[in-house]
Image (tube, rainbow, N blue to C red; front, side, top):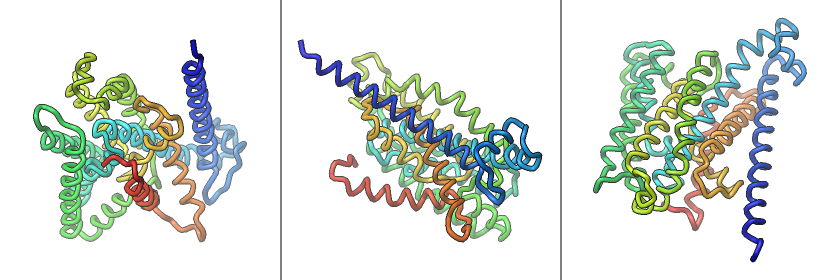
Length: 339
C-alpha cells in the first residue's frame, strides 16, 4: 500500500505548524517593536521592564498608558477583521466577500457618523451606534439577498456592494450638512486611526473576540461543508441557513466592534483569509488562522506608518486602503479568481 498520502498529510501539518509559529513569533516581535516606537524610543528590554512596572517611571507611563492599549487594540481589531473576512468569503464563496467590500463596515460607519454629527456623542455612544447600524446593515443585506429559501454566493456580494454605496452617500450627506467642527471630527474617525486608543477600546474588541471567535471556530467545519454546496452540506447533516445566520451574526458583531474601536479599516478583512490559505494550503475555513494573520497585518501597517519619512502622520485606515487597493487589483486580474 502506498505511503504517499500519509507522508503528504504529515508534510502539510508540519508546514502549517511552521507557518503559524512564524506568524505568532512575528506578532510578538512586532508588538515589542510597536511599543518601543515613538517620540521616546525604547529597546525590547526597556519595553518588557515597563510592562512589568520595573523600569523607569516615565517609560512605564508611556508604555502602559499609551502604547500598550494602542498595540492591543491593533491586534484585536486585526484579529476581528481577519476572522470576519474569512467567514464572509466562505459564505459568499467569493474572495471579494469581505465586510469592507459588501457594505457592513460602511453601515457601521454610518451609525458612528450620525452619532458624532447629529448628537455630538461620546466614544461609547459612537461605538454602540456603530455596532447597532452594522447589524442593521447586515440584516438588510441578508434579507435582500434571500432567494429561493437560501442566501449567500454572488448575490450577497452584489447586494452588499449596492447597500454599501448607498450608505456611503448617506455618510457624505451627513458630513456636508452637519456642523463644520463635528464634521471634521467625524472625518477624522472615518479615516481609521489607532492614535489615542485606550484600555476601553482594547477591552471592547477583546471581549467580542473572546465570545465570538470560539463561536465561529465551532462552525468552521460547517462552513467548509457549505462551500461544497447546500445540498451536500444538508446531506451531511448541516442546516445551511441556520449556520449562515449564526456565522453572519458573529462576523458582523466582530466587524462592528473593530469599527467602533478604530474606525473603518480596509484591506485586512479582505486579505487575511486569502493570504493564510495560500501560506498553509488549508482546505478548511481558516478562522483563527485568519485572525492571527489579520492581527499581524494591521500591527505591521501601524508600525510601518510610524516609520514613514519626515514622520508623516498617516491614519492607519488610509494606509491599509492604499495596500488594499493594490491587493484588490491583484485579485481582480488573477485568471483563476472566482467572481
